[in-house]
Length: 65
Image 1 (cartoon, rainbow, N blue to C red):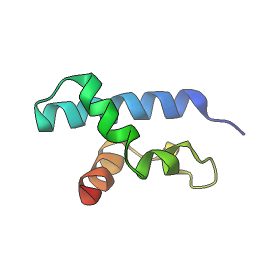
Image 2: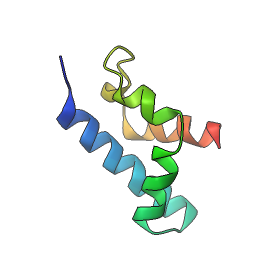
Image 3: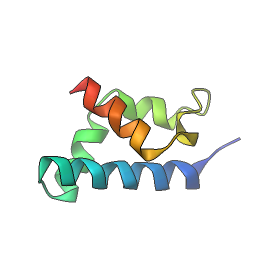
């Protein structure tokens, strides 16, 4: 099953969190997330990461930075 809506919402919230924490524009925050290995895990339905909270996914992002 493809969880496009869940992924879209999750990604947008994580991007907002990155932008706030780093004090950068949303575009730059999006580029950081899409440049990370984490985005592939979010987009992969098999990982189930799309169902986790934005705060949890953001914490994973921070660990990789």
